[in-house]
Amino acid sequence: MSDIKTVYLAGRIDAVSDKIRRGWRTEAIHQLKGYKVISPLDVSPKCSDQEMFNTALSNIQKCDIILADIRYLERENTGTAAELMYAWTLNKRIIGWYTHTDIKLPRRVFMNALVKEQYNGLQEALDAIKL
Image (cartoon, rainbow, N blue to C red; front, side, top):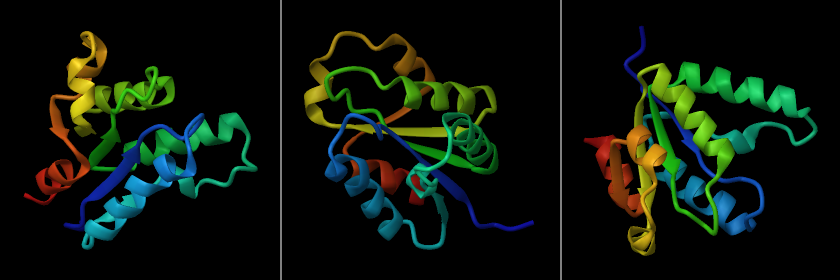
């Protein structure tokens, strides 16, 4: 049995810039040396929707920790919410990060219930993983 923890990087992929999609994931991978990191961006875009869905579920099953970008970004991200719900049913540790501008949002009941560990900024979330 390996002591190496696996971290899955959940967060918006569709309808955002490449900088938003990849930027935080690149930083997380860089900082999580000593962890196995799984990014949904590693799935071939040629896969069918069903294959992508099945791969995401499989990756969530394999991981120990979910690191989730839970920034609001104009609307909720249903894909990320579905991943988090699945991880929650598997009792995975879910760590979410947002930005200070998200604090002014109306209540996000499901997001707050699913993500018990929420941090202001990626760095705080990464630090929580490394503790």
